[in-house]
Length: 515
Image 1: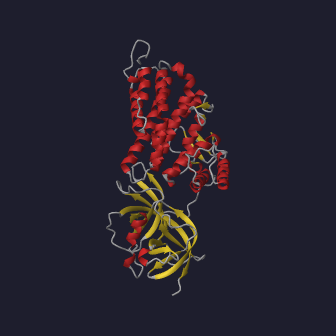
Image 2: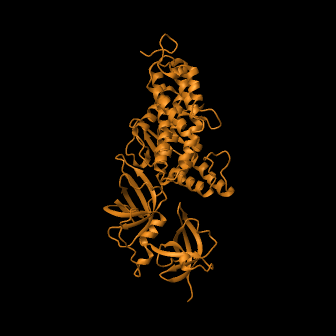
Image 3: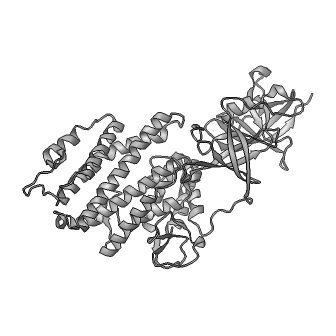
């Protein structure tokens, strides 16, 4: 039998005493967000394990810790998103702190729901707060989805199971659609249904093709438009579905063969035209409107790129593959980053454009190819390797059957239930050529020229070639001198294709220098 806080028994927990609970919160490290969040996680975990709390008192403590964590978890998230991916120890520490917080907070609120259902002491007092409790639990589960996706991992089945149970409970109690103050503040209004749809739409938005910073923008955009998402027991014009009776990750409606009582169909609804309108507004004004919270990101091209990604996956027609995938088996040697690729190509080694070399560099890895298309590869990455790996990374590739090195871009990363990391790589060229470039007219000696990578041996129909340059070298104005096999060419800037952490991929009109 549970002990009552003020009814004859005492709870063996420091936070059972309101005064001591306030002292504990006031003693949290003010200038160390990571440490403060770690302590809050420990208190939440111990609170969930401790029996005897009256339910209304348990809720008071959970709410107090939730509020105390607000600024700390925001700072940890900001630090995580700005971190270089090769800072593995710090990345792990921050991720574990953030994910651990949302998991323990979710479990604390879920416990409150379960104890209310069981009629614990204090249940009658918190009855009016049930919609808020369920909505907060749902939001914590959605943020577990977000933090899992930031690492391109599979979402734990537990998360969808809890989301399903909470939503069914809210429906049975008749408050799933009631608009309430989930949290105090300008963006605190919502409903259990809205919080549920946030998690489902975020999962359905294919964020495995976005960098962590872009994923954060996507999650915030999902939250911004969540009030306009739709859900129904009938298909209507909705693109996705989720089975409350057999909860797992939502799927496109076309993959569902038969109707089932637990199915809920959902989609962007009015959120899609509003998203399109926001894209147009940002394109016209060059800035994110003040009432749209995208985490303070104002970089126009980044934001528009993310919003267009969402628009594709929220639409009636998901993006189609440019070419068919074919299952295969083999391996490919991989080197990461612009500098390693250029060094591997070794411009001093080939009059016949054979840029193969012994792949014994410490930077090289062997990936297992599982499928191939005209546009690239699908591969499995060996465990405990590729700490540099992230979406948008430039890679050099050499297949078992080729003597040439190609260049690709990592476009997707995911982890399966066996913790195998799978990547999708766009093949930019099958045969990369090392070259040297420098600002035209600068009169620089050949030894002063910058390394670059030429992506084709001949111009296309527009007279253009693709070139991979060091990051920051392309500005759209300056022409470049290009040296290939001791022959000089003039490159006139045409367009930027993509800029990465360590490279610019640009197109140039090419003209041969007169002798």
